[in-house]
Amino acid sequence: MDLQIIWDELPLYFDGLLLTVQLVPLALAIGFVLAIPLAIMRLSKNPFINFPVFAFTYAFRGTPLIVQLFLLYYGVGQFEGYSELAKEFSFLKGAYFFALAGFTLNTAAYTTEIFRGAMAQTSFGEVEAAKACGMSQSLIFRRIIIPSALRRALPAYSNEVIFMLHGSALASTITLVDLTGAARIVMSRYYAPYEAFITAGVFYFFLTFAFIWVFRQLENHYNRHLKRREETIQVVT
Figure (tube, helix red, strand yellow):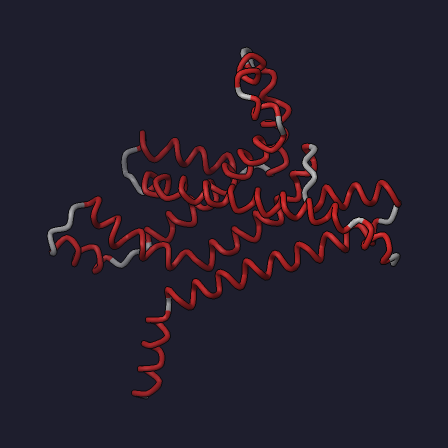
């Protein structure tokens, strides 16, 4: 390996890293906010509320992320009136908006199903106790079902965050210079695929474990009552 190539191109990789750490957390944050009400709608027994959300999650979970990005980035321009709209809103011309939209919709679909499953597993006794206290349905969701579900969903959601980080490498296919885009530029300049992509892999490696560490701390914080229960059982036995 030629370490000089890596050293010379580090500024390009750091620019790509900056784009990645902007794009991924922003998409995850918006997707998270969208997923909670969508998960509640998925629990509804009314088909007019449930089915549109089911169709949305089924479509985005059933197709590759790269296809979704291509449809958004290359396909939207075919709609009549898009050119005029893009003149009014310049951000519609850039690849960043379409990458953010594609990542957001994709992670929202997966996160919706994760949260729906966690909400459906809420203990019947907790809900009945809340009703006995006179809580309304909306209050039960806010104080009982959603907080409890988010705690249970943390391990599965952490996996979705890692998948989204790795999936963000596809941003380079629509002209954005993220980490993978930087690696592709380095390879084209020096024809050195090992140096180019191993360096990008190292950056992704450290980003991945940073996310894992954050979620490990969150799990330890929100599930500390379970550890106390385990310690109590061990003392008794």
